[in-house]
Length: 394
Image 1 (tube, one colour):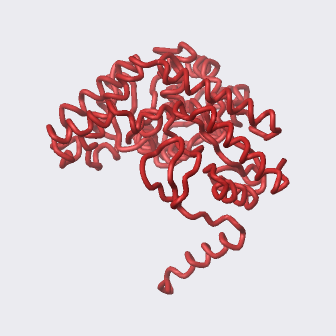
Image 2: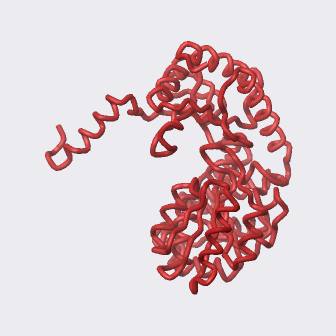
Image 3: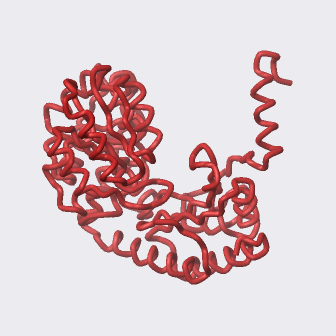
């Protein structure tokens, strides 16, 4: 029984159960593969961010083992005291080279990379202009900065410019920030137009490329490369836990900006640095992106195949342009029921509702990877069609 002081939390959980919104954590029993074992059941996995299948790549596994033997299992300190190892610096140099920037810094997660950077570089006297569908880590960073926050409707360049005109005389710094690929809808930001506005109105231009790195651009270099905007985006944030297959986040910018984050980004200052095995696997992953562009090509081949199948069946996939492909249902309880019944039938596609997406826009979020076979994707489409017809979604 919960303590009296915590009873309200138990009550809130019960409400979620009654509304059909309560979700049980799925337990992965083995490797994160395109066909994986969750909760004792073998399912086609459409819920992983492991875009390129690198988290089980033999080269990355070997590098992790070698790093443990050489450096141990942990760093033992924060970066600013005794926790900066040579392998951390090697990783940051590798990222900066890959992204074509002066320098990079690695954070403990993509979330802390965004939140820590925005809150470090801005203050009360500044203004942030942010897409309304930006990731939660950006939202939290904006709030922590205490800057004025001005949101523009999703991808609405005209509305963004209207805000910039309104604040043209503002004395403080201005930050224009957007996701590169939006994590719930799978659409791509209008980055060329936003970069042009940032230059015209004197804004710092920042992009969160978590779902674009390893997916868009040459060898997966991301949105900036995809649109050939090198040198025109001031701050690029990425993740090491999606296409790279490991754990962490990073920020790319000028050398001075990165040095400033060393001194003022709170997650960097107050969190123990990455285990050397993680840093080693990330270095190996970036090497593979340069050496094996066919990984990204296969990802896109599978994406096209699956999207065409969903369209043929009549599913509403919204405005997706990337391997993130939502199947929009609308009602949250129905989306979660759809997800549960799919799981029982052999497909893991997570249901997502409010507050992650707006009320009335509940969905399944599906992601294909480079390591799915078309045979398994075809089977997933058959199961999706069968359960959707059963629930009268199709």
